[in-house]
Image 1 (cartoon, one colour):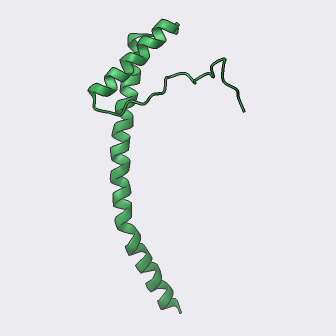
Image 2: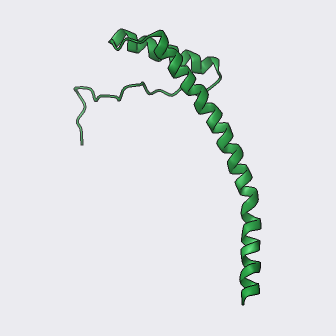
Image 3: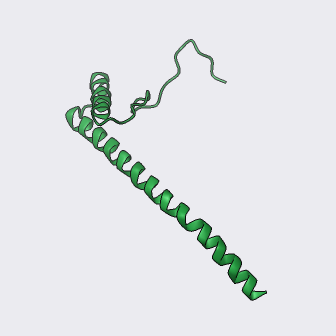
Length: 91
């Protein structure tokens, strides 16, 4: 019984090891992307430190330009949460 349990655990470990290496590579890739996105955000915040509506728009544009220059995905969201418009009903 002990031998069967040990063999089963050994087989399970052998099956899981290669997947850990793939997950580690994916983590490294995503981590590098996140670091560059953070660098773009920091660069934009240094360029436009004020929190006026004009500065916010310029900061977001600078961030998106940096992301495009770095060949990173540019999302459609802004740094502040979206507010519903007056004509839409909330459920």
